[in-house]
Length: 126
Image (cartoon, rainbow, N blue to C red; front, side, top):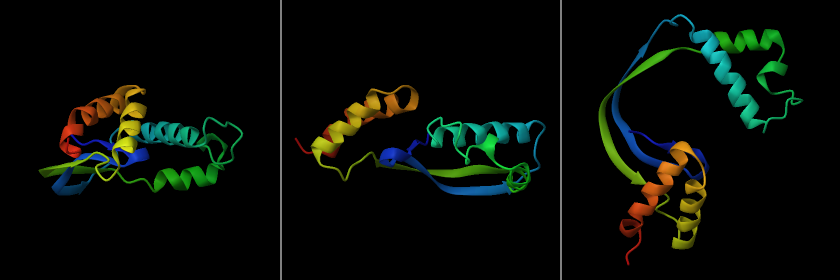
């Protein structure tokens, strides 16, 4: 399982070898891309519906070019390399703060925080 949590750059495992295959857009994928673009742009603009950069406020010609530029591809992971980089280069106080912030969230962030808490003894010599 790969975890990528960008605010604190957490990575648990990384694909070491893979095959990339370009694929045709399966039915419904374009609407799924558009839904994702809407959600991402809305989230990155902190829900500001007046922002000119959320998907719904972009010019139609730009959105058409944007969607056409998306290429579907498949990744076949052929090898995984276990990597534990859960804020290991932090001091203990920062590490504890990151763990607490993650555990206060829902979903994957909470799970990552719990995993980091379990691994703390391996990160800091006590």
